[in-house]
Image 1 (tube, helix red, strand yellow):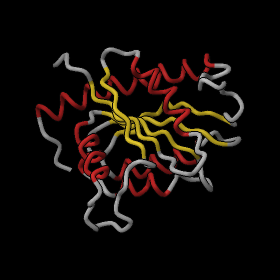
Image 2 (cartoon, rainbow, N blue to C red; image 1 turned 135 degrees about the horizontal axis):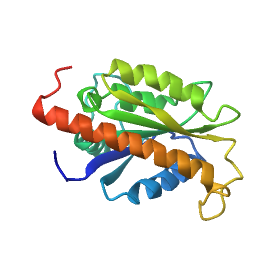
Image 3 (cartoon, rainbow, N blue to C red; image 1 turned 90 degrees about the vertical axis):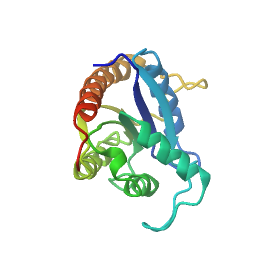
Image 4 (tube, rainbow, N blue to C red; image 1 turned 120 degrees about the vertical axis):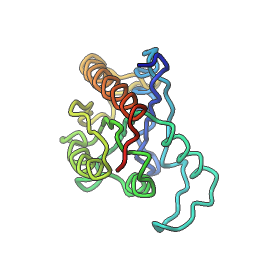
Length: 191
């Protein structure tokens, strides 16, 4: 229905000291920016100061900025590590302090971790986003034991497999994002 770019927010879910998330995020962001149909923004949980308790007012300017980015988004990609077979608490806080921002929008996943590549975290996130009326994209990008497989510039040592997976994820996300944005324009979603 429209030729305007699809607003994609990439969410960096890790906030630990020495985290690997920004490396993965920079790689994925570069892939997304190669596509003219996407306008890309980043929400980093390490830079977003949300209230520690749900329902408490968000007073830090970074919280309002994150909310505005999520509200303007047509689609999301969550970059998540796997912590204790699940996803980080800061990511949970970001998700839980928002509700309508996720509704009737697609969510894709890029994960990293040990032998499972963060896929257990993704499986937990799928259930959470389904509860929030978001559409989870089946295709993912997963990095198994990625440490040491990235050079000093942040480039992947073997980018072919991950690059192909990212292309499929972005194709699916763009299709769903455009379809759902058009649908929300014709009939606002009443979640």
